[in-house]
Image (cartoon, rainbow, N blue to C red):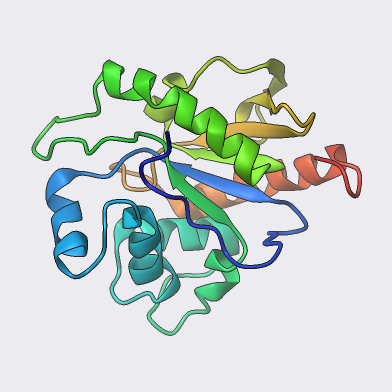
Length: 208
């Protein structure tokens, strides 16, 4: 059911000792055309975008630049150590159909709903310890969580837990969208760092 394959670094990628899944929202039609026309495929669209804008840092894209600062605390630059992030995290865009381009064209409720089975499939496949959801609207449209762990306002607010059939679990919380107006990676950075530290304390070595 997964149409856009996730970014999956080789080996056993961990960020701060955690299997961290960064969950984006969607691909947009116009923005995706250049990647596909350049030799990529829709199946590898997510991977191509992360490789080009994230790992290689070929140009400053607001989303990827803010994610880099969010996780490292360092300003984005072409010469930054982009691999310090992208070699150690998973990335997946939740909506599994291309959203239309244009002002105010957001993924529809149907697009969100139809993507839920693929998300569950992804959790089974990646088995993350933590899911960092990059967007409040995406957070509101995720499938119902298995357990509400609690509200940790000093970090990222509500924390939920997703379970898989293999009995592993993933702690999930959200930030605002890194490309949204007024988003400040510097302000969100300590909240994300605190959340990840809290997650590491909850997860015993060798357990998910």
